[in-house]
Length: 592
Image (cartoon, rainbow, N blue to C red; front, top):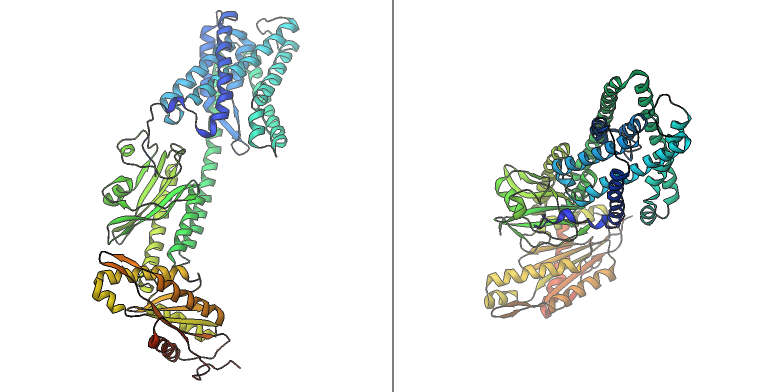
């Protein structure tokens, strides 16, 4: 459900949802480049190159490590503390040098290490960090200078506190105000509540970083430079350990939640033998476990040896797809090999990117794919696939979970298909005689009101004689589709035998039954199936009866003989509808 696209130019393009944000970030990034040039020209780092680069390296490590708070929305990191330490200990030049070095390391490592970061949005977003933090550092230096001048920190006092307070205020405000228009456009209703919550949380975390940086600077002044360089990595390791523990806890909680959902989904999959219900439940399981808006379930048609897409959804929209050839595409590959396929980025992984086609919304490029065969009794009967527009969207645990889902789905699908074959006529796809009589017997046993229509094609033998038995079967197939489409959802339409059909109208009144019988007779009389020798058509004769009130146990054979009698009366004149009466034949006895 994805098509091959040229990935070479994707670096320069923003995704559809990031276009508005991209414009803002681009403007801020241009400001950051101008800021860097001015910083180098007006505020050279002086003699603190070793310290600035070393602190930049530490800050780069701190950027990727942090404790995620409030559902992962905010991160407590050591990064700001490093810049503030550099500012208080060595001055603004060293702090800006550390900031630029850390940003450069982050961009280079991000572009080289992860395919997901190889786009202009990532570069601009990291460069924008220089502008926001640099502006706050310059504001702090200005306040520090106005309070008494910049000098090496000999004791922590009013000047430093004023500079840090200015840094905190500018950084907190700038970091939130720059994206106010975007936040307002995305959620006008809850904008003010969200802004106050996020600004407050940001301010709190920035205050912690401010205290950490000033604390390190104070310790550095008292104990000397070397001990602080030892303390910074120790603090970073402690943060990393705490973050790792919290992430492990979150992962375990998420895995437990997914396993609970899997158990619930497995139970729902096996509650019904109706194939459509199984497909609906499979769709729900895919949504709940993998947050999937793009997926499909394809089943093998053994007559044509093609893959029929029983259910295909793209971005929440149901697709009607043509059958797939087993010799082509990823679906055919999985069916032929019988092996599951997990692709982190279809655009960059050969040979898969040359084997896919895109169906559905072309604005959403499929990137991640999980696809596995549905194997029943060592034979592949279909393929289930879950897909995402994000690269590397699925974790290893989700891949294992997907295989477990496939095992549950194949069991439910196989059972539903066996039940369908046991209750369905292979040619017309209507119910077969045994299932029909079972449902009719249940109505009689339970005393459920019902209408019953029996139909027989007039002179159907002439179609076989004139056009051949193959054309006759094809006509019956079209006739089955027509009858199925004209019946209600609760009706039981059946091929009773040969060219004879029956419809059980559960809960129908006499007028409902008459309307259905006449509608069917009229529609069938106008049906014409085109053959090379001409159009094949016929009419039907129909007999019907109605049991409108509760009835005692009535023999099934007696009811069928009764409606058959009406059918034979109709066939005397052909293309007619006759009614049978349970009361007239003394078969209908009201319940006492």
